Structures are given as structure tokens and as C-alpha cells.
Length: 379
Image 1 (cartoon, rainbow, N blue to C red):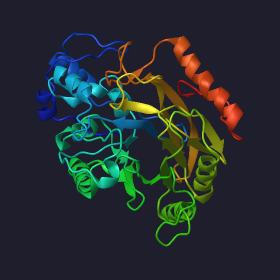
Image 2 (image 1 turned 180 degrees about the vertical axis):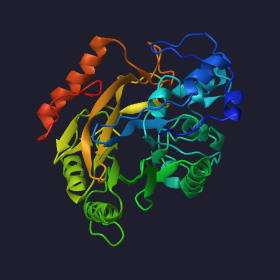
Image 3 (image 1 turned 30 degrees about the vertical axis):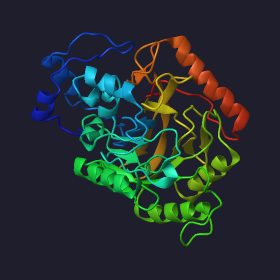
Image 4 (image 1 turned 90 degrees about the vertical axis):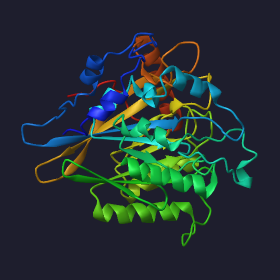
């Protein structure tokens, strides 16, 4: 199924010079022919002999772009943006084909789409606040990213004003978003996928509205969603920063989500990759790490991965889990710094190191770790 058709206007806007290298950024300009070739829609259907078909879902960790107009930080990102003629799609050049060829791409959008300089009092002591002008929502709409999670510790960096402007900007651009009170629903190939999102960091046992704890709310929300939608994806912003493994609260919440009806659980916040669990037939990705991250010019660990999974749908509309793969990436396309261009890794030794890190931490910290981390589909 085609995800969307690239418009002539988009093609005209994107006639500029930026890299397309799969390893390191090069200073070679793109021609219009190159761009047409790479934006041309591709049929990526997988159909079984019995008529069953598949839905492919892609998930990433933190997408944080822009800077901090309160502390006047983040100039390096804008320098890279200027180098690329103010076209923010430079960030997605090495991964957009992955997003184009799936059925749904879901990322954690950690920041705000607003020009306001207002900062609430409870945020003024933060080391970094994130915002970028609403016009740069094209990083999503022009790169086949259909949905975002809006439950994280930076969406309120500019208060209700910035938060509301962010949501309105996403709506106008046709990007779905989910929060703890707003469910997103995506229609694809005759199937509706519901998406729910929650910020958990310090809220697990605290009352939420009519619910005694966040655990209770999450269970109730998922159970209700599952009554109406055949596929439910739940995103959690949770865990400890810089940790390579989940906490007990994360494991409890993730498994509760599955027991309540979730078909996929994805997490983020630690800025580090965490292992994947297969619990009662459902994948729990405890942390997908960073993806496109402007908050640090040179993080200690710039390795990460993109998660993809497939759901098999029979002609009777029975849905089952059909496996997953990971795409190891660096959050940069150059070696010495973060240039905000997530790039699939081609070095087999580095890919092996990422896989081994995930396996080792899974075996050490999880009760139901996946056995393998496939780098490609098994069919």
C-alpha cells in the first residue's frame, strides 16, 4: 500500500544540496532526478499463498530537534540546518526510505513546535528546554512519519501555550499524536491501530484522575481500546537516564500493558538502548535510545537502533505477531560529532556489538528476553 504521494511542491522545495551517504556525510549535491528516484512510492507488500497479508510498523526513540530559546543553547543544530538551506529533511536522508516502505512509523517527539519564549516557573531551572518553529513540522510530514508519542518530560517545556501550539501544528500537518488522555487511531490495509502514550518516570504509584495509580489507568485505558481496535500500541516514557536496562517498575508496567491487551509496547527516555522482551507473545522494547537528538553534540554513546515488527492478518481478519528485526544505527553520519543525521550502520563489528549488548542485558535483567535480534526479515 502506498503511504503517500510526494507532491510536485515538495520536489521543488527540496532541490538543494545535502548528503545521501549511508556512512558519512558527503559534500555532493543532489540532483532533482536523484530526489525523484528516492521519493518515488514503492510497493512493499508481503502476501502469503493463503491470502494473508502483513502490516509493518516502525518505531524509533527520541526525536528531539531545534534548540533552547530560553537558555540560548542548541546553536550547533541551527548551524547544520543553515548548511542545508534551512530544509530540516536533511536529518532524515539516510532513514526516510525505511519509513517510506513500512505501513506506520511511530516516533517519540520530545520537544515542542512553537516560537513562544514563555517558560513556566517549574521549568526555568532545567538545564535544557526544547523548541523549534512550527514550520519545521515537515521533518515528520515530508519523511513518512505518521504518528508521534507526545508523553515525555519535554512537551511542557513552554507551558500550555507551547503544548497546545505543538498539537495544533501536528494536526494541521496530518500527523497523529497520542497522549495519556488522547488516543490516536491509524487506518491501514483495512485495520485500525490504536496508539496510547504515558509518561511514567515518577508517576507509577501516584493517583491519576479517578484512578488510584497510573498502573490502574493504563490497564483501564488499554482494556477499553482493545474492545474497539484490533491492534493497540502503547508507548511509555520511563526508566533512568543512561541506563542500559529497565527498572522493576518498567517491567511491571510493560507486562501489565500486555496483560491488558497491548499488541506492542515501546519505550524511551534513557537515551540508551535497552533489551527487548517477548512476554505472552508480545514484544516489549524497553528503550529505543536516541534517534535524531539535538540535545547533545557528542553523546558518550551514539549507537542506537530502529525497531520494526510485522503483524500477519488472515482473510478472516485474525491477527498474529509475525516477528521483528532491528536496524542498528548511529545518531550521526559523521565520526567525530553528532550532526543529527541518523544513519544505518554498515560495519558488521559495530552491529555485532549492539546485538551483543542487547542480548547480554536481556539475559541479565529480563525474565523473558528474546532469543535473537534479527537484522533482517526471516521471510
